[in-house]
Image 1 (cartoon, rainbow, N blue to C red):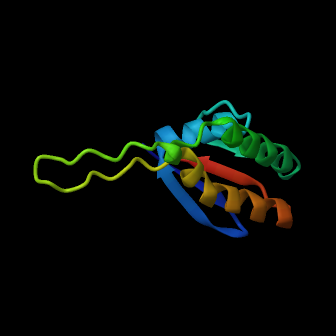
Image 2 (image 1 turned 120 degrees about the vertical axis):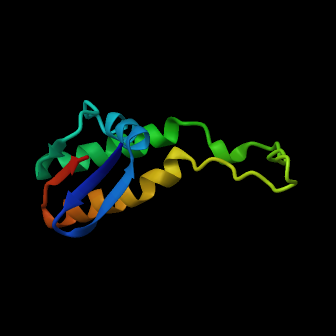
Length: 106
């Protein structure tokens, strides 16, 4: 499943459902898709998201190198939830600054 976040003041953001639901829950939302946040609730949702991401251990701090696969190529490290959250945080900040609501659907 893909989830798309929309607001009138920012380009749409689409991400995988597992990451989207995790970020919605960090924002204090139920994680249900579809959903929406009204303009008055966006500052609190953004603060909760930032605090929740700050409480997650830094996944890039792993000092072990990625193992080589059978072909001798390096495997890519997984993308952290904090990295996946950056575009959504930009969208939320834009909506907050312009007083727009944010909606998401699949």
